Image (cartoon, rainbow, N blue to C red; front, side, top):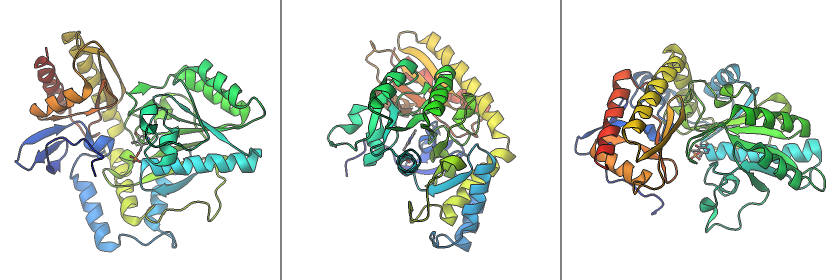
Amino acid sequence: MDTYNRLPISITRGKGCWVWDQEGKRYLDAVAGIATCTLGHSDNAVRRSLIKQLNQIQHVSNLYQIPEQEALAHWLVNHSCADKVFFCNSGAEANEAAIKLARKYAHKKRKIDRPVILTATSSFHGRTLATVSATGQPRYHKGFEPIVEGFEFFNYNDFPSFETLLEQVDINGPRVAAVLIETVQGEGGIHIGSEMFFQRLKERCLKEKVLLIFDEVQTGMGRTGNWWGYEHLGIEPDAFTIAKGLGGGHAIGALMVKQHADVFEAGDHASTFGGNPFACKAGITVATEIERRNLLMEVNHRGSQLKEGLIALMKLFPKQIKEVRGLGLMQGLVLKENTKLTAQLFVKAALDQKLLVVAAGPRVIRMVPPLVIKRNEVRDLLKRLEVTFRNYE
Ligand SMILES: *Cc1c(COP(=O)(O)O)cnc(C)c1O
């Protein structure tokens, strides 16, 4: 179906931060399957462990114990604030699980009949009916009304807006069950969560017994230079969701919860493919390789190098570039409103320079390269961006 506006290249091969199209042309990949190919393409460790897994067993179903799933769950629990994990196959599914958990928590623990979940404007939580309804951007709702009820929106990083909404929804008694929010907004345009805002949010949620749930689908697994985006904010959520970077390019998602927020019982939620041996083996390999290669430190170094280079570009092209925003290897170049250049035009123009970048909204060029990107490759990326801008002067 015509659900995607595809670019006119077919990618057939990849290695590290590089991909080749059908004609053999080589591109520097700062998209990485939209922040999923954490260790780059065709990584040796991932290849080896997945080939081994394919030879052993691929899928069994959650009717049985799954050692690979248990191993990944242990790793995740040992490296985060969560105590329990539910596995699924994507970011939207992880958020669906979080939404169901929040509603059940409200019914069971707080006797709320019609729970409401508060989410932020310019957020992105997925494309299923509930997660698209949770997404605070009207353009994603258009044509799919009626959207799922029980979601209300406040302005991101705006505490008075949050408080006003909370009080409005709770006016005739408590209804707010949870807040679902990204620690850095990805698709919505790379907006970094403010520490002050999140700390006040946490305080207020504690006071009201409202669950604080972070959507770390894009920020999780080292993307920002910490394992989880919330580490930059000095607070912990009651639950959080991950997906994109977890499988290194393979389909897997997870809902992570603290013990006190875990209200799911047997039969409450399920996924046929969720937590299958193959996907979980990919997750364990990605996690242990990030540790073994000390990649979080690399993400911080390469992230700073990229950010400094982008700021230098902004000085070179002040008419086109308005701002540089990002954390670690999740960086955005914000274009000025009064230029003809849009993010989508730039993405197309960058193809001529054999560079892959992705838009985050109409005005933001997003760079989310593999976490294994090297110093000279960041330099190369900046050079290709510069040439692309030069052609637009
Ligand atoms: C990509 C993304 C999703 C949706 O993930 P899918 O795997 O496409 O369903 C949800 N939340 C955030 C923050 C994302 O970046």
